[in-house]
Image 1 (cartoon, rainbow, N blue to C red):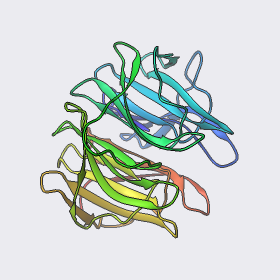
Image 2: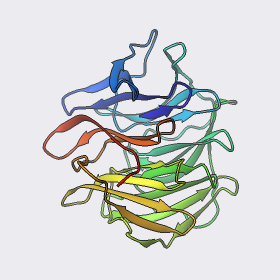
Image 3: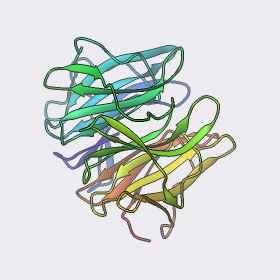
Image 4: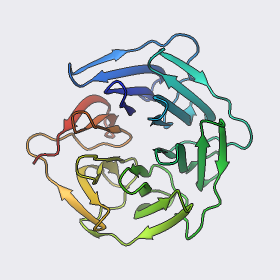
Amino acid sequence: MVYDSKTGKVLLFGGTDSKSFFDDTWEYDAATNTWMELQPTGSVPPERCAASMVYDSARGKAVLYGGTSTEAFLSDTWEYDRETNTWVELRPGGALPSERVGQNMVYDSAHGMVILFGGRDQDSFLNDTWAYDSAQNTWALLETAGETPTERYGHAMVYDEASGKVFVSGGWDSRVFLSSTWVFDPTADSWASLDTIGDVPQPRAGHRMVYDSRSGDLLLFGGNTRDSFLGDLRSYEPDTNTWTLVKPAGATPPARNGHSMVYDSTNNTALVFGGWNEVEYLNDTWSWNGEG
């Protein structure tokens, strides 16, 4: 799920309900509180879940990569144009990230690049960092400097517009759930581990993070540990390296993992859709306006 800043609406593609994998494209309009299936013309990406999608604000298009459908792990790259309501398979030249699931991607607006990190393929958990250049239609494996985050799946990842850096939180490495916070500098191609303070999130995977353009903080919601599903909301302030447990007023989304989360910069709200709570797959939509 991504926020389309050109239309002020949210785009969603695919997913699973455990019985089926989906290849449908939907749009959410906060002004009318309605979902609409878009039914793009032409070819569409094959059905999948655990894929990654970002919004390329420079070109006004969504970029989709990877995921899984039934037994197949995927490494295809697609682009969606809301103006024409069409998907196009990009078929990048050169080296490609391996087929994978549970990776995460962000759009680096300062450099006009898509940054991908981690996930797992058929053989192992991964900690490689890739960049996609839409102008060249190529993926490149980055030779990063500094200590690199350990292999992980189901981590959360977000681009901080203020600093131009990428933050990664948590994940699962097949043995333990992780609670570490890392920062990637796309200018220097370097990773660094952060010794964060405050209400540090407990180890988890399947959670989501977004950048709150109003406050400049990063917002984290949900996920799961080995024993439970989580429904906590936390904010991270990069300037002070501090996590804070947020207690919104009123009702809050039930605990879950595998949901989608975006930040609607027009209405200054964080939006959550769907997920899994160990009992059922969900299709509820929640918003939080930063109050309480």
